[in-house]
Image 1 (tube, helix red, strand yellow):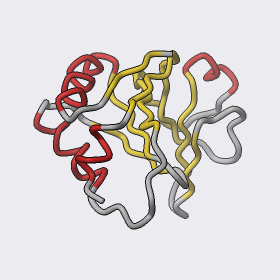
Image 2 (spheres, one colour):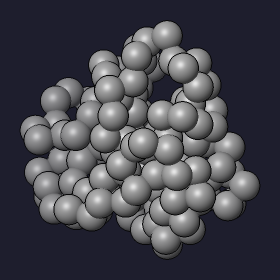
Image 3 (spheres, helix red, strand yellow):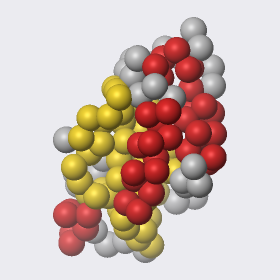
Image 4 (tube, one colour):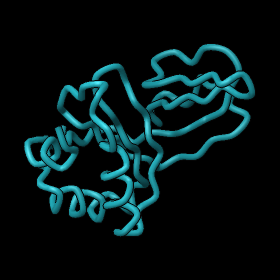
Length: 128
């Protein structure tokens, strides 16, 4: 299985919310994702929910793109193809992987460029 074949049949879902990437100790309720790498704890949280977060650092203005496909573990290079296409469009990403699919966050100002680049890979776009 080739990443480009998967992308040609894939829908990219654009979440309606705008997200923040924050560093904060402890749990953040309703976080989309939490990564604790032993040095810091990073949370991705909807900007609507930032009021209750005691964050050390906050980076706002991110839009969440979810690849609506089950990606098998043996699929090699999926994120590499996505990241390369977005890099060529001058779009910075914050990438996250779940058990069966991948997500990327892109800055609000880069959203349309990112969606154009993913459309060129064959992805369909669905906005929530």
